Amino acid sequence: MTKILIINGPNLNMLGKREPEIYGNQTLDDIMNQAIAEGKRCGFEVVWMQSNKEDELISAIQEAREKYRAIIINAAAYTHSSIAIMDALKSFDGQIIEVHLSNVYQREEFRHVSYISPVANGIVCGFGGNGYLLAIQGIKGNI
Ligand code: DQA
Image: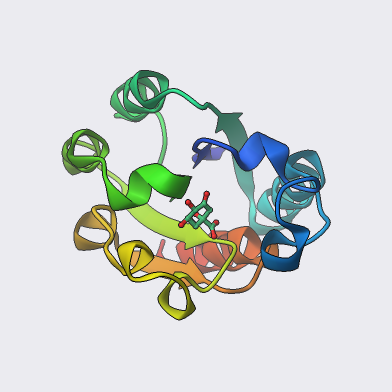
């Protein structure tokens, strides 16, 4: 079965408790279960990970080569700072979709800069947890 890796960066493990007025009330587990179900519906096996550590995110991207057809990544705050994550994504051989729960372009200016966007095939932001489902559908449409 075609495999998709969903990578979540720092502080996303706090969803549900963290700034609910921005990020909503769903927990990361709620979103994960919906993404796995949407993956199944689209014929994909979804593998999910979250880490607060930049090195673990980079290793996950490196190890995804030749194993996954696509990476969906919400690098959270590392989106706006990590050249190392961008470089790791450059060596990935499948589709890359950048996801953010919030509309980062409506927020502080430092969130308007993304090191992921230049290497992503598509970007979804501002749809809360549904953004991950839209990303899965987008991959389905592009395969
Ligand atoms: C986020 C947006 C980032 O700016 C922020 O640092 C996050 C979450 C989002 O999903 O909206 O942690 O990636």
